[in-house]
Length: 139
Image (tube, rainbow, N blue to C red; front, side, top):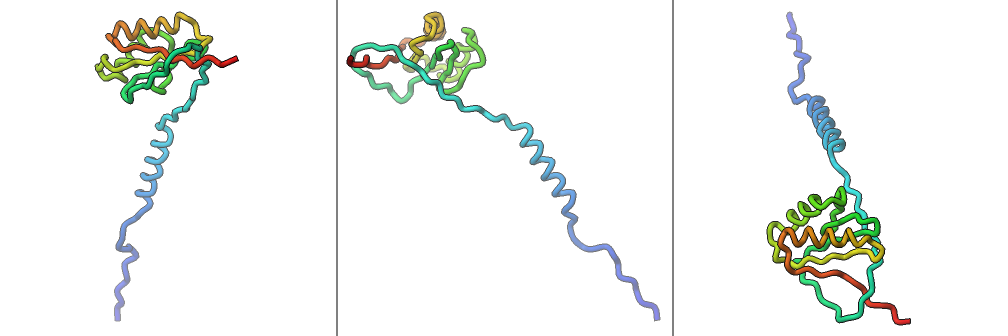
C-alpha cells in the first residue's frame, strides 16, 4: 500500500514581508518628519498712557524681539530681511491687505526693526496699522 505524502506547503499568507514594509514605512516617516520648536518671545513692551483698544479676531500680529528677529502670527522668520518679512505677511494675509496689522515690538528693540516692519506693511498696502504698548506703572 502506498501512502500519499502530505504537502509541507502551508496554505496562508506569509506576513514577514508585510511587517518589513510596515517597519520601513515607519522608519521613513520618523526620519522625514520635521519637528518644530515652539518658542515664545518674552517682550518688554514700551509704555504709553491712553485708552486700551480691542483687537478684532482677524488681525495679523508681527512680533519683534529685542535682537530684531521677527515672528508673524506666532511663526518665527528665518532672517531679518525685508523680502522675508514681506513674503510672510503676504502668505498670512492671503492677499487681504485691509486686515488690521498689529506690530508688537520689545522696548529695547532697534528702531530700524520697527521701521522695517512698518515699511513692509506699507509696501504691501496694509492701511490699518497699530503698535502695541503697555500701561505705565504707577509710581
